[in-house]
Image (cartoon, rainbow, N blue to C red; front, side, top):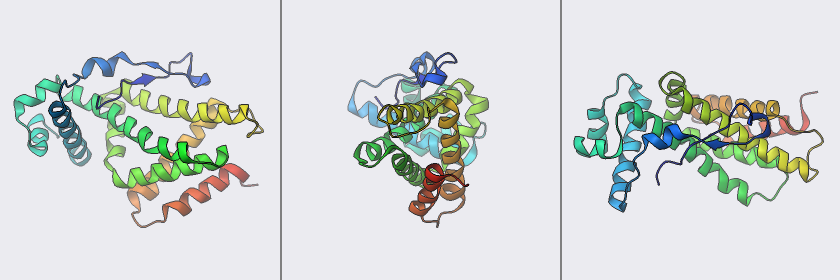
Length: 221
């Protein structure tokens, strides 16, 4: 399946880093039954990312997306009900791609929890530099697909909190991690990605991540 079946952290579960299935994105997605169908759906999603990233949701059209994807207009409706449904699926898809880009880095990391967050940040910075369109798409999602916009941030913070809680359980952290810690780390990552992934294509991302990680580890005072 191209797009992960979305998971949203509910208000009651947010502080505990839990997530529940989000029916909204699942309902919008038509899962292909063949490999050719999966390739076609992937082409449409990739074309939509480029189109929405360049022109925004309202200025983009289904016709322009299918032309960019190299697929017939009729094929679009095999996989998506509307431009809105495509946008919602794309938000979940990009959120999942960030997760899948960072996960192997974390899995292979052999250091402590704080250092692992630095490795995760560097991986995210590289993703942001390669996929600058994610910022415009996620920003627009606040107004075009608010539930999916909310899910993106809640799920990202929940994953961070789960990692911190696991580290605390192993005795690696001296403080009890909370939602505040998870959102602070996520907020730092998001804006560092904007500054050094999108605005500055020349910065050494390993050094950026190292400085941010030192802040997590040692603080400023």
